[in-house]
Image (cartoon, rainbow, N blue to C red; front, side):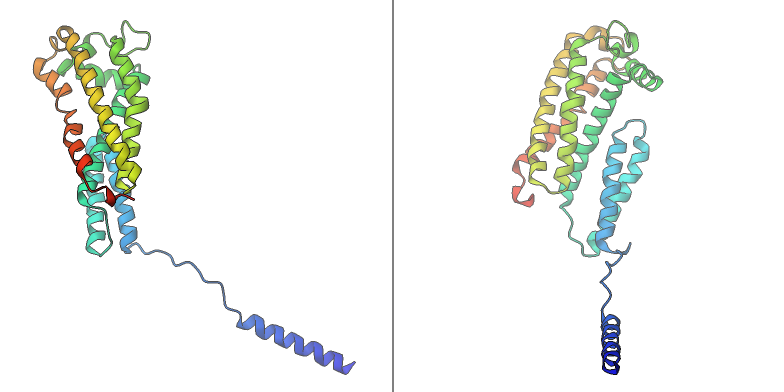
Length: 248
């Protein structure tokens, strides 16, 4: 009986020693805000968010400081030694993201929310300055609302549901240095060229009542059909000639 008690005591002692000497599971280190990788991630977030807000028209002035903050944080991470993507890619991807957000959100409001006070105020004011059709005939003569130009309404639907989402997602992939992002950025910008050709031809056919009644007239036509659509003409040569091995 004494031997049994001694054996039990020894077993308890060994168990206690084993439990005491067991190491605690390693804990995951909490990332510091001063860590270059964390600075880069915050900068990327502010850059993406600022590009989208800049493309929202009315909130554009608010998005510009966000974009600048993002770029400054990315620059800070670079100075701290963190490897970042080329700045040319950042600028090109940002331009595509801003442009796709601007066209997608603006035409999206016109197509799906044309009866709201925001759309009526935005588009009728735009019509008085540039495109008189929006000032004279907005929300009249069409079962889908907006401008009673069926060709433009069909073009808006294709742009909002297909072309601009493709360009926006491709810009995100381009900035993440994904090969598919580069490939779809090329496809999306060529789609934009086709949209520009159709849109310009459609406006020219209705030139008198659209631009003959606006404040800017012919200049307004080139403001709408020329300047905003120069982006693909500038970006496509870069996208076709850049070193594709940079994207995984």
